[in-house]
Length: 138
Image 1 (cartoon, helix red, strand yellow):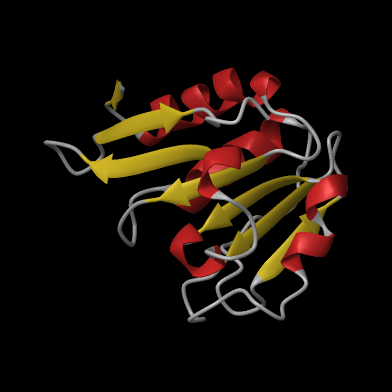
Image 2 (cartoon, rainbow, N blue to C red):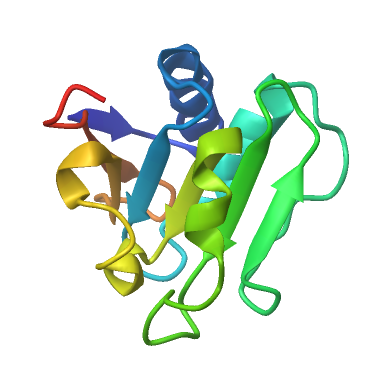
């Protein structure tokens, strides 16, 4: 568990965790609206050298970035299920970050994902982040 005091510290944590992840890995991001899930992904993209705008793909659902490794960012907030989106077709070729992963229930076993839980802390910018690696050793 990490106690984060600011958005800058959240970005530093994302940059620290990034080297552990590879193409084919799935990072499930959990937390309430506004907790910092997209901010976390943005920091990973910046660490990979991406300089363009990074917004939550709430409306287009899936966004791919030409980074090394290639990153796929999905926000499933607006859907009941990710079935039929084709998201699983991209897993093997990307490091995939999924916001609202409860909507991908049948796409991949939960034990094969990294889980990053971001919760609000004691102050407006503070966060509590819990990182759980895959149980399957993926």
